[in-house]
Length: 142
Image 1 (cartoon, rainbow, N blue to C red):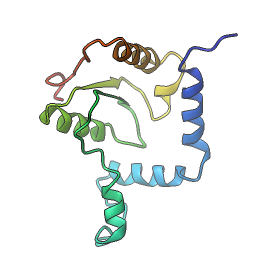
Image 2 (cartoon, helix red, strand yellow):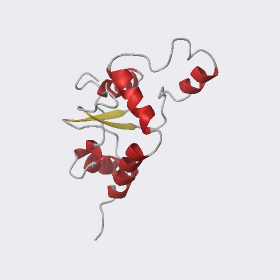
Image 3 (tube, rainbow, N blue to C red):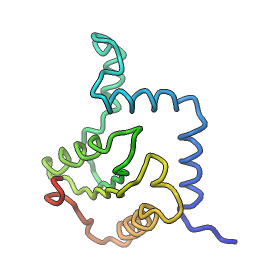
Image 4 (cartoon, helix red, strand yellow):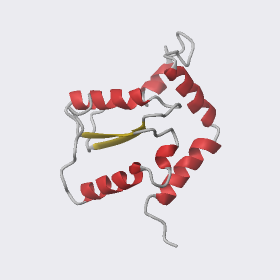
């Protein structure tokens, strides 16, 4: 049996999400963001820890078009974070396609039958073919 090109990648991503030690951090962050509460104590971001975290913020500019997908029902990482990223990218003139997956949870977006696999594969093939990237800037508030 031949697996679809993204099947192995989706399975690996799902496995990492649920079995490694970072899961607790992911869950804690998701709960904190969902309630608009800080995940670290006040003042903890002043100094080396804050500087290291700042290095991991997706701030752009990017030298390639972006594809971002997010499930509308994700309770671990709020979809508004992807919306905010898309809004900032659009405001900066970046090429970004934001795919919102209706009723998609944190791991549901990786399941067989999810629109993510097919769209990500076609988007990637379009880039390798030299096609101009699509953009959702100006659509759905992005």
